[in-house]
Image 1 (cartoon, rainbow, N blue to C red):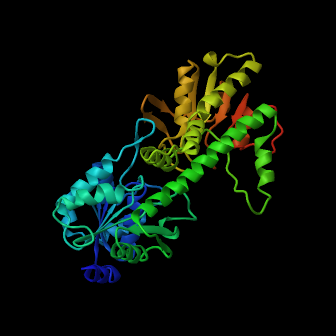
Image 2 (cartoon, rainbow, N blue to C red):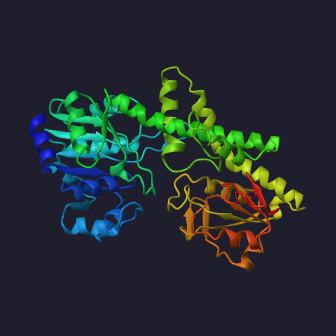
Image 3 (cartoon, rainbow, N blue to C red):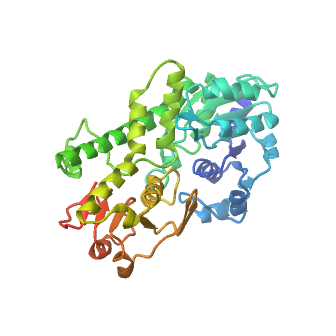
Length: 433
């Protein structure tokens, strides 16, 4: 049975279904279609599917012209009809894995996708879970659910985990340029998954188990959340000690070994860093292990918007202004520079907290013309001399490249810079994080 599927993959005759057409699934679907596979992109979101049928991309990293070419050639077919899974030789599950509550994983999207797959899976199919999750999910949750079909894992179908490593907006590292980690429930599953991904990715690293692959992803993201939390704490410490944290980081960067620069800011955003490490924290607690570093870093990062507000109060106080009567302008609301992505953006939390102080708050973001999310219903302001003169303080939350920072500095009264945009600037208007 593995040999039949192996030949289909090698010859690119295997039909691939991708469940979930978000930041992970769509680039994968496009990459496989580009090299010659027939790909079904499946999503419950009708708007996404309709846009793809109209040959339009809704993700920065995927070009609409590429979508148009692949849809026209019928290499890529987007649909809300999960009956198409019946014809798939390979099924890639790329659905969200958010949190429910503060520290508890929400695997409902994975469960839904797996239960749907179970209805249509045929003998000889390879199923690969890409959604970030806690160690043990593939073996303990996905396998039993799929076996409710009457088929047996590693005999009738093959199952593996391969963590997504998408970095939205990173032009140097698209999905096909980032090495892939795979871990199957058997040698056959690992080998089939390796052969599959080598069709689009040069380097595929096989680990001994699905659990090792699941843990790899969580180690990567936990490393980042812990170091970001640490540098944010250092920033707060340096402020107390009256030391420029940005100068200290630049100095430390001159060491050619033993140091990797991380930078302070409003916290962490996107899907991966704010949530994925907490999957590991939750799983470890089930086994009686308390991961102090992950929880501490998560708490420090989530508190950064409030810390910035505390600093803003002090800045305004020096100018004989109370925060509740102040006019504030937040620059940048996406979670990442030059990326049109609002997921878990700490800028949004900052705006919510500022509104809670009863101050007047507006925002400007060249990528986000309006906000209609949660309690925030706002339009982006225009950066004009007249508008800037009305604000008591401007907060640089996300440092998009297209913003005219010289203009901002010239016509603003005070700027609180959380991103070190004004490094080296000698102006009494600028207050750094």
